[in-house]
Image (cartoon, rainbow, N blue to C red):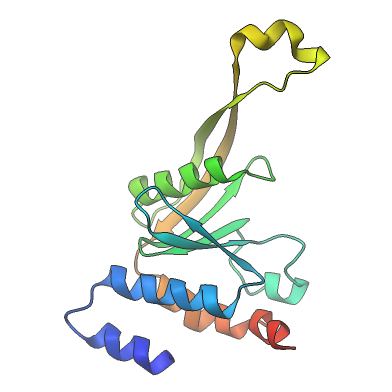
Length: 167
């Protein structure tokens, strides 16, 4: 499979987005225990790795120092957030904003917000008229279009994540 991607990468007909999507699909197939598949608003899929307790300590030293690592056709997106766990709506907004705003440089303290309905319990009885609550987090991260291939071959393959999956 490695040679397939490299020969397709050298082909002038394939774009960087196609190569990134091939690698994203390959990562989802090879690492289903660690990477979760999500869909963005445009219908393209991403492979999301949460760098948390599920990842062994020796692999955390190899992986980039970010809480969330996402592979997509738009590139490698890495970010930290001020609050976790982060639900999918805010995660998706953070990834999409980093794809739009970051061209390889790190963006610090970007606010990502999400509206959600109040739970109807006794404590919030007087607040029900408001109907919705806003939750915001600060995101610091970067999106790099040309780094998916390097991340896969130089970083991900040097971890033990795939080897643990086989046993």
